[in-house]
Length: 358
Image (tube, rainbow, N blue to C red):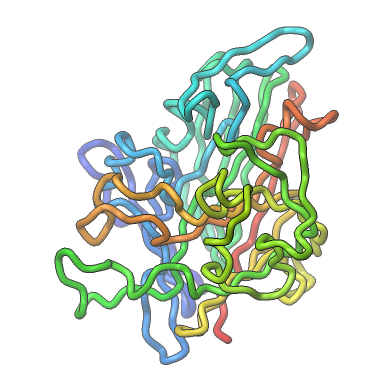
């Protein structure tokens, strides 16, 4: 049985809540629906926090890493910050080199959501005004978090009064090795290790290629025989340094994986869209989703941000993000982009994280 509690409200109006059961302990902030802590047991029975977050959640106003946040209106990139709907051109902020990313300078990660405690979780809601960050339509967004047994489920819902774009995801970074607070001292690595030994499996036969700005441009690469083949388990560090143009363009892995299998949510973890496993701790997360893409990001440019929860800024490769979403830049490269949300249409995407031990 999951216990849902309100922990506190800070002076700046940000609320904090806990979700706890026998398998998972979580802390969630209303600012950007952020997952601030996520604790699970390892194979020895030790509890550790396995997600990255800011020490002070309000530091997200000065840090673009999106740690733990729900991202929108449109997660990932839109080339040159421009798109057309119904013959009208819309221009967005260029907040990632020549491109637009993660909804703009003040995306949903910057919004303080209204939160309702419900059985087994939280419902979080925000409003986005017409032309906010350049997007048409008044939009209502509801994020539903539920913790049931070993499964954390999120449903991301949007509805708009005008045709617009939407691509919602959660941008958590994981490090399944956990943290040893007794061994950690100022100046040391906060985590026991980086993510190089994490084993990853993704049910995808191809990736979208990206240019040197990280933007997909319409070309795709079959993963067979390449360092992008995670159809069976491989460590993240095994091939990340290989001499491959796509690894060079992105500074590591930062690519959309086009899922070839999206098994139902009741089909079991062995048919999951992706699995992330850390042999040392035994922890595994299985990702089940109805989204067509998982963006794999190995925190190639994480360094230099605001302090993490352990008092120092995180460094590159301290975590890995697996973001379930639509194809980045889909509005420019897919004929019938699923990013397009019709007026009055209710769009819901769901992703489950299932935690266990191998």
